[in-house]
Length: 175
Image 1 (cartoon, rainbow, N blue to C red):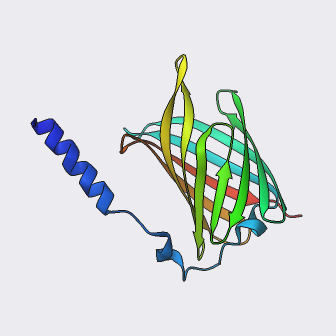
Image 2 (image 1 turned 135 degrees about the vertical axis):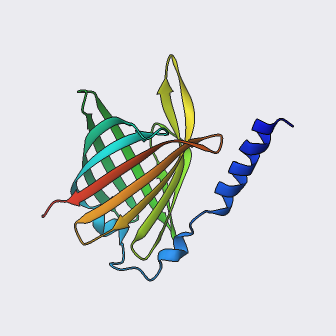
């Protein structure tokens, strides 16, 4: 085994051991009710940081969210600082203590869990690259700060190595 391979395995082992558990947030307030927060119109502002720390993208998101029973729709319209636009429509289904999410550019199902003020959402994104796509692992952590404000940090990785981070702030509009 080469020195580089050994170092890569050690780094992978270290990151696997340092995982945060959603249950660590069970006593945090205010308690996040996902169906209540993601109901109505929400504005969001975000950045994408590459693994070297440079900010590669800035964007805003308009989210129109609604629920019918235990099924929610989050209709997201992204506008990037370079003028590009993107659309993602999530369908969330509450199943017991979990949320199952589906979107056109998500491979399979996204799995979400809440505890206290936190929501963790994990999924594989089918990300456009060149003439094709690449599958990226997304680990979203959202934290409710008050009844209208939520912060989000997403780690985006490929083969266990983080390639980017996304930071967002959400602000729910008054009804």
